Image 1 (cartoon, rainbow, N blue to C red):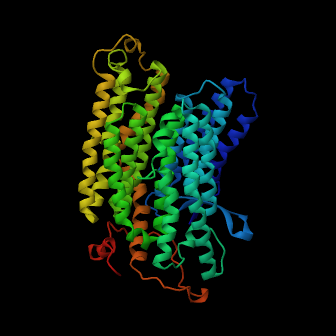
Image 2: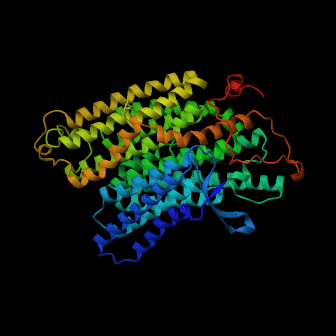
Image 3: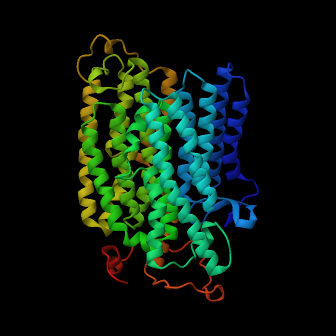
Length: 538
C-alpha cells in the first residue's frame, strides 16, 4: 500500500460535508451567497480530485493514498479509505457532475436546504467510492438515501411524494440484506482467524464454501442491483428520475446508479469469486434482458425523462455484461462505461431541464421544431444523443466496444444478443430527437430561447469530456487496466481453487495474499477453464 502524508481522500469526503454544515447554519434569505458557496465548495472538491488524479501512480494496481485510522477498535471498525484505477474516475465523475448540477439546475424555493442536501449527498457518494472498510462503506451507501429522499420529495414534480417513498423503500430493503451479509462475513472471518475486522483487504482471505459464497453474493447483490438498477429491480427508477428536479435526476442517473455497479465490482468479485463465476450466466442473462427491455420500453415513451430513464437501464445492462464477462477488456469497458454513462446522462438531464424551463414540459408530443428557434441547444443535444447511441469518436462507443469485445471472448452468444441493443438505441433516440427538434414549430415552440452563455458554460465541460474520451481514451484506460487485470487474475485464481468445506483454525491458514501487490496482466480467463461458466464441476 502506498500512503500519503496529506490526507487527500479524507479531505475529499469531509470538504463537502463541512460545507453542507456551514450552509445549513446560514440565514435562509442569503440565497445568492448560499448558491455561490455551494458551487465554490463543489469546485474545491473538483480541484482536490484533480490533484488526486495527478498524484495517482500510473501502472500501479494497488490501492493508493491510503487513509487508515482506528475508529471503533473494539469491533474492528476503522476509517479506511483508498483509491485504485477502478474508483479513480468514479471519484472524478462525482467531482465533475456536482458543481455542474448545482450551477446548471438551481431551484427557486428553499435553496439553502437544497444546496446543503446536495453537498451532503456528494460527501456520501465520495465516501462510498473510497471506503475499504465494509461497515464504513455501508454507512456512506445508506447515507445517500436521506438527501436523495428529501431532494425528490421536496423539490420534485407532481408525483414527487410517491416517487420519493418508492425510491426509499426499494433501496432501504435491499440494503438490509447487505448489512446481514456484511455481518455474517465478518463473523465467519473472525471464527477462522480470531480477528474481528471489516477491512476489505483482510476479508478477501476468508475461506468460504460455495454455498455460503452464493448466499452472501445474493445478499450483497440485492442491494447493489436495486441501486444500479439492474432488471428486474428497476421499477423505482423511471418514477424517481422523472419526478426529481433536474439536479436530482442528474445525480441519480449519473452518480448514484454507479454505486450499485461499483459495489458489484469492488465487493462481489473480490469477496465471492467462485459464486460470481457460477452465477455469471444468471447475471449475464439479466443484463441482456435489461438491454433489450430498456430499449424497447424507451422507444414507447412520449416523455423525454422517462425515455432517458429506460435508456439508462439498457446502458447499465451493458456495464453488468462487461463485469461478468470476466475478461480484462469486458471489465475495463464496464468501468469506463460507468464514467461515460455518467457524463452522457448528466448532459441529457441538464438539457431536458433547460427545455423544461423554457416550455414547462418534457412531453415529446408538445415539443417539435425546437431546432429552428434554438439551433445551439439542438446541436449540443445532437452531440450528446449520438454519444449515447455509441457513435465512434464519442465516449459511448469506447465502453460499448470494449464490453462487447470482452464478452465475445468468453460468452459469445450473450454478446451477439446484446449487440442488438446498440441498434435499438439508435432507433429510439433518433426518433425522439426527430419528434422534438425537427419539423415546423408551433406558436409556443417558436419562441423558445436558445442556449444562453451561462448554460453553455455548464454544458461545455461535459461535451469536451465526451469528445475527448471518445477520441483519446488512453489516459483513462492506462489507469484503469492494472487494477482490472489484478482483479481478473484474483477471480481466476480463487474461482478455480476448491475451498475447504469447514473452518480452518487460524494457525493452519495459509498466509493471505497481499491484495495490494500487482499481478501479471491476464487478458481473459483461460478457455480451458470455461467449464466454470457453464456450471461445470470443479
